[in-house]
Length: 439
Ligand code: AMP
Image (cartoon, rainbow, N blue to C red; front, side, top):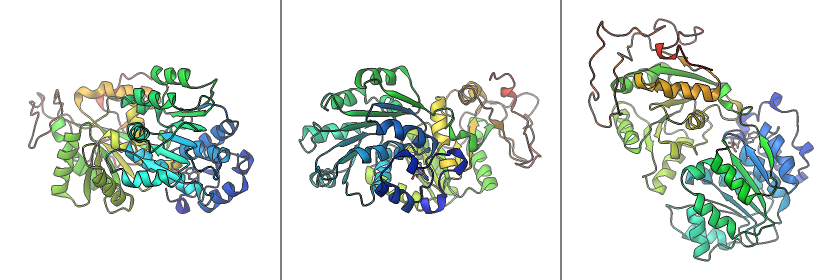
C-alpha cells in the first residue's frame, strides 16, 4: 500500500497510538516516515502481547495490518549486531512471502536489520547471497526453507522468534510435515507467533504442540473488512458468465479488477477470452514460472494491467492498493476463500466492490458464505441483460463456445429482478434462490 496516499488506518478504528504501545523512538520515527499514523485494531491488540515475549495467536484477516502487528514487536526484541538468523517467518505462497518481505523492509527502514526472502520456483543464488550477508530476519515458504537448511545455507538453531503467518492456509496446502520438521530444529525457548484467519482443529493442533500457554488475540469478526465492501451476486447460467462479465465490466469500469476462477485451466481460458476482447488482461496461476508471476505482479501493482484473472492460491497473496473490484467468476466452495478473495479490495479500511457469479445449482454455496459472514449479499442485475434462464450445469465449461447448453425453461426466460433499477437505487430484490436463507 502506498502509505503516502492511504492516509493510514481510519482514525476512529483505534484510539491507541503507536507511541502508547511502547515501541522505541527509532521505530516510531520510521512509522511516521512511512505514513503509519494510527495502529490498526490487530496491531493495537497484538503488539503489546507479543512485546511481552510470550507466544501469541492472532486471528485476523489479511489486509488488516497483521504483518506490522507481528513484525514491529519482533524488531524490538532482536539485535542488529548479531549477524545470524534470529527471526523466521513462514508463509504459504511466494506472493505472500514476497509481500511480507517488502513490508518488512519498509518497517525495518534504517534500523540495520538484514532480511532474506526464500521461496521456491526461483534460483538459489540471490537467496544464498542474502543469507550469507548475515540476514537476521528470514521470510520464506516451508519447502525452500527446508531445502536451504538441508544444504546448510541456513542455520535455525539460534532463532529467537518463529512466526507462522496464515497458518490455516499453510496447512491447507499440506505444509504441516514441513512446518513440524522446521519447528523441531528450533530452540525450545523461542517465541512463537501464529497468525491465522480461521482456527480449524488442525491449526489448534499445531498451537497445542508448538506453543507455550499462548495468549489469544481474536479480531476475526471485528476485523472482517468485508463490512466496507459492497457485495453483490448475479444469478447466471454457466454459459452466460462470459457475456455477463463483459457487460459488468462495461457498467462498472473498474480501475483495477481481480477476477477469480476455481481452476488453473479456467484462468487460462478466461484470460484468453477476455484478451480477445479487451486490452490490459493477464492471468496468474500456480503453473506459471516464478519470474513470469513476478513480472505480472509488478505490472499489476504499477497499474499497467487492469484486469487480472487468478486462482485462489496466487490471488490470496495479492495486496495491491488500487484494486477497486473483485469478481468471483466462479464462486468459491469454501466461505473462508470468499472472504479472502473479496478482501483483496477494501484494503486497510477503504471501500471496495465485490461481485459473485452464482449458477442455479450453486445457491447453497452462496448461502454458506452469507451464513459465515452473517451478512446477506445483495442480488444484482444488468439492465436489459438476461443472465439466467435457469439452466443447470454439473461442471463448469473449460472450452470455447456455448458449453452446457441446457434447454430454456418452459415459459421463456426468467425476468431478472430489478433490471430497470440503476445500481445505486437502494435495495435490490434478491434472486429467487435466496428467499429461504437462514442467518
Ligand atoms: P497486511 O494486512 O499486513 O497485508 O497490511 C495491509 C496493508 O496495510 C499493507 O499495504 C500495509 O503496508 C498497510 N498498513 C499496515 N499497517 C498500517 C497502518 N497502521 N497505517 C497505514 N497502513 C498500514
